[in-house]
Length: 277
Ligand SMILES: [Mn+2]
Image (cartoon, rainbow, N blue to C red):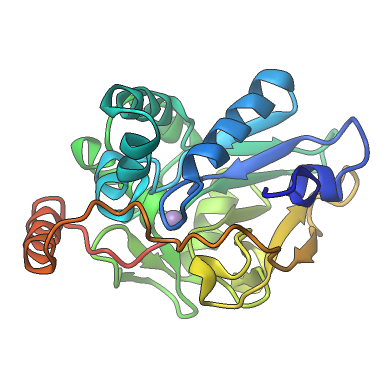
């Protein structure tokens, strides 16, 4: 985003009929979260029907407090502005369903993944009262924002302490019972910017290259086209230079011991650990 031409939208879509879906985690873990979120808001205002934003686990008060976005907003603006960002984040949808033409099939997109119980329907996701923080709602919202796939069947406790790990059988059962082809999610950094798992039915797309200036991963976008909804393609990209400001610059400065206690307390209170994205 440092040069507009390097943004996924302008770099990879030269047509006017593409629809872009941004799958959460727009802030924290970097020093230009404000600019990132405002750019996405501007695109949404400019192209309301062709730009869509979903909420990630970093569009939440607790993560913003711990991982830097609140500190960044308070440095660049003020606490009132942070409250406005929080209200906007709470309004973001938790999932999207992309439909192909005719009987072509549908793809679901969410930031994290699937649920701790069987039998969840799209209607249940629609009925989540999303205008709140995930810890307040529990269950489905936290799972959507936090869960990760695992390569073996069944469910396991998540290493993050919230959400769960779900296997290929869980993915297949959820997709089949909701008449969906594929689940696309993000939430985990991947060396190539994307990974296809669960027999092709669970895809992770991660679009932040050289995550936190340290991982040296590629970023990627996933492209779904009419006529090939069941066969997404991917565009990979590498990072571009940015001004010399370290990613964690705006994390609120408190003594290390105090911060450790704060994180531990909040982690216990909300059953969160802090392995992100
Ligand atoms: Mn995430």
